[in-house]
Amino acid sequence: MDNKVIKEIQSIMLRNPMVTGSKCPACGDKKMITDENTGELFCGKCGFVVSDKIADTGAEWRSFSNDEGNKARTGAGTSLTMHDMGLSTVIGAANKDSTGKPLSASVKSSIERLRTWDSRSQAHSSADRNLRQALNEMDKLKDKLALTDAVIEKAAYIYRKAMEKKLVRGRSIQGLVAACLYASCRNTETPRTLDDVAKGINIRRKDVARCYRLIFRELELKMPVVDPVKGVSRIASIAELSEKSKRKAIAILNEAKKMGVVAGKDPMGIAAAALYLACISTGEVKSQKDISIASGVTEVTIRNRCAGLRKIIND
Image (cartoon, rainbow, N blue to C red; front, side, top):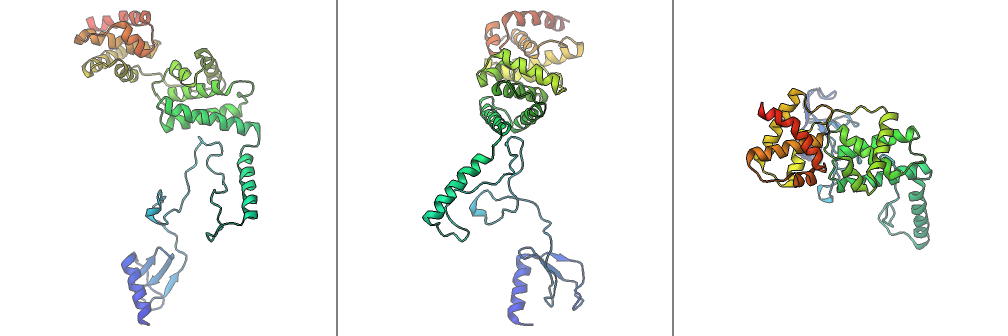
């Protein structure tokens, strides 16, 4: 065998010492080598190529920077938060051909026109334009309300279902988007109230509630019972309460759940009342008004809920 071929085989072995247990059909040697770059399986002794189409069984990865080399084997993942689910193609902004040469003036103007029509054609129907606008609104609310990707993904799924049922026609996009986001928060047990969502999208609470009741009824959504404990941290953070008061409030709520006092009550109201009683118990000075502002619940509601929770503490 030529020395050049042997050196090439040795360099591949050093670069990728992946050895299989099969035999070489030419010399019978068991030292088989897989070259990941070319996809070839060959003998490490005589260099006989057994197969030149080996599928890569390595992990899937993507390169997020040019420094890592040409690692991109997969594209971006599909997502319901994009109107085309991330499956469409776009004409790039670079005015260069495949070899990297700049385009001529005439070709450049043609590409510009094609690029414009390509972007317009992605949302040619009214339903597509509606969906694109709705998903843009959701993306804005994600940052305003500090929501996770999972919540937005679920909200996009609910909105698409509402479109299939033709619930969007004749109703405001903002109202339905807010309703879908609130339903998603309820479904994923994210502590966000109707007032939070309505304030974030800048529409009336009544409109959000009306749209929510509609999609809840028509889509037959199954919502878990909201745990008031999840609202304690949020209220305590806004009202700047101590960790001791927060833990005491959680203990009060856990005891109340065992006795069935929280059933059918507004979770934020119960959480606010538990925090107020916890402040009294720990000696922390916080008025009902302070906790009312932090929780978005009226002082009357807090007083009414405190009446039921006081029995637990006294017992």
